[in-house]
Image 1 (tube, rainbow, N blue to C red):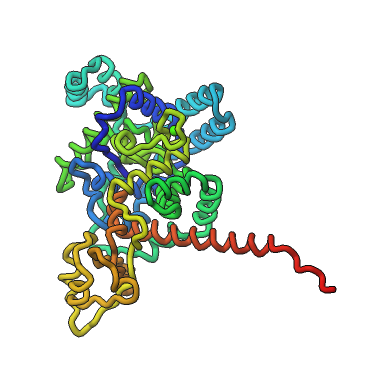
Image 2: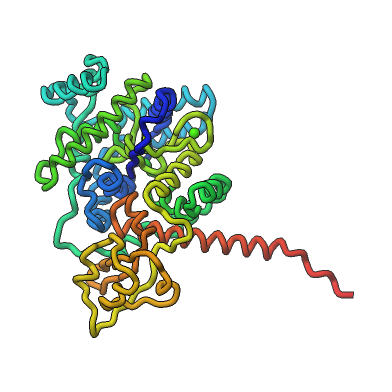
Length: 453
Ligand SMILES: [Ca+2]
């Protein structure tokens, strides 16, 4: 996900500073799971105002996740054990001054572990030149930008993970779904919801985004903070800014995007006095519970717990408020369903026409029906536009839903209909499981029937 807020200029220097300090201080590494990183990627493209990486291609990266996961598992495993240990230490030390000191040690340890490989950019003349230009543009000390970028490292794993999926393979919604809608994630989601119920309810009230959708996003992105990424953000961004795989058809756009993210990251680190070599994130440079890009953190991050810092790594409250804010900014409409069931009238269906706009809601109910889509019940009363969303199931027949503007809003977080559907189904599973829990609790707490006399 990414977030760029138009009113970023309204942020005070202090809030930017404190935000960055939180960002730099707060990012502890997590055990591998580039799985979540892959989830993030498509969002880069869409949510940023700048032209994005083609992760923006709907549905493409989503169905490729199993492959990406397999690739990622070959990544820098050496970081994992240390990362896990460091995280545990940091958490054990808790909050407060002592906790911060411990966390910093943990951050340094994990950052060291994450950089056991990769060629430093110190010897790259073009990167050093860019560092000098950045310093000039942003009024920073060129010695600092060069010193920092000299310590960034090219990560071949990042180059592998950013590659678009192989073409020609049919995607598989059922397989994708199975990776995100399972007992482990639902249980973790219920625990998260229970622990954060006040903030989730407040976010729902203030932003109009249902608690289960917020919980669904954080669950799919990072399994509630368990998989927040294992790459140093500076390495990921530098690799994609200066050594992006060149075969990509939109290379210039993508390089521009990642250079912009790197510039924001370094500019704010410079202002805050934080160490840009410490934060860890996904292979695309996304960070924290909701996997925000640096620009997103600044533009759409919310200090929802009111402690003066935006900390998306350690504060579930800030993560919840920020996700809700992101959705509100990107067009979430309170009370609008995400999608409706759809069937087809085989005698007159025009699938080419129905699928032409892809996931962008375009058709009125009347037009949708005229093209051979069959909807019923509440869908017939839907006032807004619809999109025909196609989900491939490998060799099995495709699945289809009629997506509304709220379905589309979820794809602003990650431009994949598979991703959006996974978030929706996890959300529904959480809502249902929570309802079931409440009913059971209600039943258990019923007063025992009075003994008959
Ligand atoms: Ca906060």
